[in-house]
Image (cartoon, rainbow, N blue to C red; front, side, top):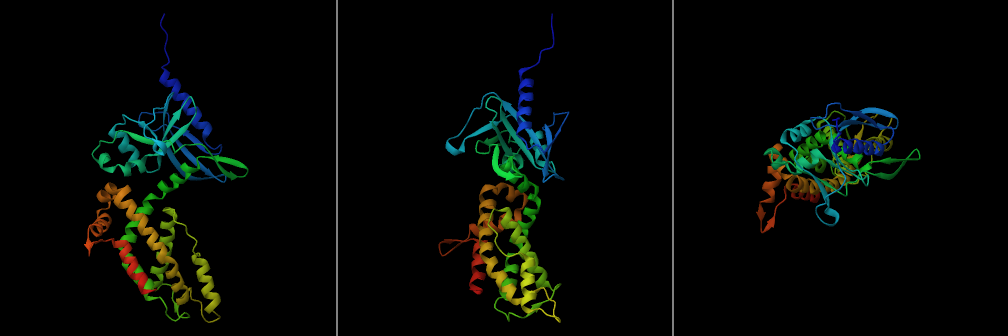
Length: 329
């Protein structure tokens, strides 16, 4: 007599999903997809301090009883191959972060990869539809991390960080292009206000006021995104200090030249740090992505890299910042 037979692959899939589910924080919501033919196993909704704020990511699970490792030392990885171009394109154009999880059902180890980040680093092959294998580093392990919150250990803090990087990626790319396009103008505004009479105010709504506020906010965002320590005063504290020092019954300005000079002195080192990180990102880690998607920004940096002056390799961002740093030195 013949009976239906359950394939071993289905058993492994169910076991891996159970392992993955148990590894998630208890307050995160798993929204399982009933039809899994399109490269999505489930949506995960992140809960922050008991609040659901619409923060979701897509999860695709791969599993195996045995892991075949590649590479050496801290560069070991596992590969998920045979991914068709349609699925890769679908993942890339989904309007939310997408993560691929690899589950070892024997050891219950879970490793993950930010798919969109991986695609950006291999963008030429992606555009040519030759990217069919995703590498998952073994140092990206999804496991409990010692982060205490209400006496509870949370899982996946590394994934949580990568999620927010991906969530704010569009804003980051806008800020990067803005940084490169308006660098000289913003540095010039800061330099012009250096060492002016400290008690002179600048009225809200003036072009320089708007530029200074926007510069400060954008630099704070870029530093935080690029993992550059930001210990500068908040804008609200800067404004309060100015009002306490120079304001009175007859004056209610938000910025004074003393505060602007201090802002400039604090920002110039951050300009340099941001420039160094962007050079590495645009001309190395994600060069094909920026060359194809943001040709102008890539070309500005690439042309200066290829320009030599007296045998010294040029660098538009760092050279520009250095020239303005001398002005306020």
